[in-house]
Image (cartoon, rainbow, N blue to C red; front, side, top):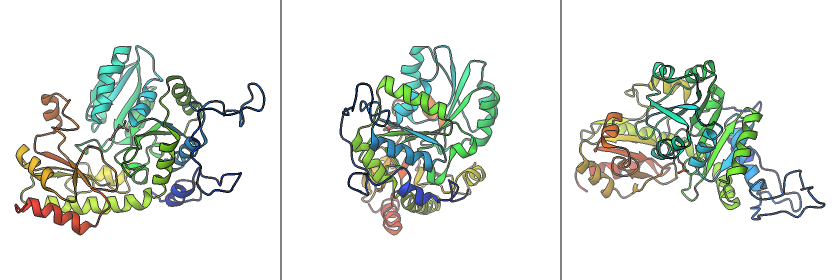
Length: 390
Ligand SMILES: *Cc1c(COP(=O)(O)O)cnc(C)c1O
């Protein structure tokens, strides 16, 4: 994957500059927080800029963020939402009762919950499959299938889906492909360039990167899809506040710098854990031992700071997560600080046990979100507990 997304500018330059213009009245270099619900119109039904009539419809801080994510994903348009789940919901709400969605079975738990317990009540149908296997996706596609939704890498099993292959499959069947790119970030993986129709993010995670907002972003290449998403957002209301958009814009300026460190710390932690006798196995796409390492190398530039590791038993998983000092015990991921969680008891507690076990979410599984601290301190923290002298 090249470092360049646009015709000319590299990813880092786009992260800092895309979507951001000096403010015209004062020349303020930072996009102001347009904390307003409405706008004064010079004449009846003539909003300035043709669109600034009400904050749910248009907001300049939000628009700057949207232009930025579009550039980083190699798309033409971006749409910002109040959360990652609201972003995914809007993609699915393009569909109508009777339409069918094929979804990865090991998505973020909240995504499956929304599909099963909310959207299927409205007459949409969902089939959950292991999207590592393109044949399983092909077999699940029906005439009514309008969308294939995948997450790669998945949470917490680090399964990968072959984006280019699934885009072909979906398009041949007249469906669209949406890729939850939250775990990879656009620095490491750009689904639109591989043929996907939607790249969707919980910007709560790597894009904002500082664990201080909840947000969602979608990038698309097709103008019509962007207009549909904007219409759905305007009609259903899941807009992010201007302050949160501003914080995300501030965070995204360092995405490329942070991801380099997440990638290198993630790989160092994965290699260290793989070599440790107290560890049964490590799931990390950047390790040669990952069953889809070759695909990872083909469609990702780096392998992020997300590392899952099986320490054998729930007792050991609990001991590790409660005794670390640099890693904090918390849900979520993608912030500058390192976190640890036990998926079976935390993020995936609502998934029925048999389904959890079938996916590999064992009681001894621990998920690390490796931050950007010093590598030596992270390894020492893990060694202190794993070597048994906590
Ligand atoms: C956190 C997360 C979501 C949900 O995003 P929110 O911002 O919490 O609504 C969706 N997908 C993935 C992969 C996530 O990690």
